Length: 194
Image (cartoon, rainbow, N blue to C red; front, top):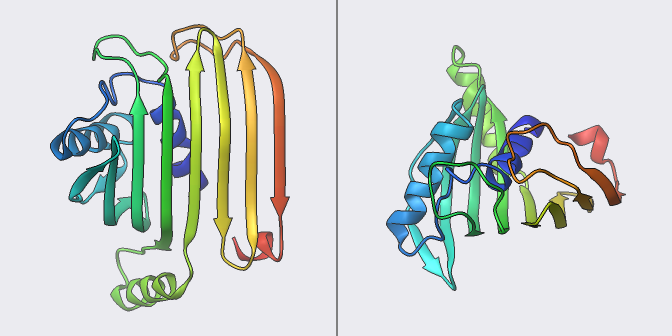
């Protein structure tokens, strides 16, 4: 799950080819997500959701995906992207806003259908994870304004950071300086459960 979340954040913040333009139609939202799943996360098999546009953001409900041996479902996904307009050169996005509600993950064996069913039923019964990411890049400065992940049972992880001195090319080695990092963890059994 951590690998999926990390890959998603990097994909949304870095390659301009993933989301070459701010979506102007539900079809463009679908293209953005399809490109993300094929180029940035080749192990992700995504069932194409029906998108709608709300205030310039792509919104979808009842999402389903497979990632490695994990079955992922989410009640809702909201993505707002402001980034490069070309597919050729990878560039950081100027702004990314991502919200996921009701994210649930269940391991899948692929060979034991009864166990797969039980794991999926157990995941459906959980409260799910809610996450929010707000970030942007401007002239060598990457700012993660908000990353908040709410876990069931009054557990949460919240982070903010600022990197400066970055190259405009996200494919270069990360060469910036960490200027600010804030990390807050609220744990009421968080590490025992996840």
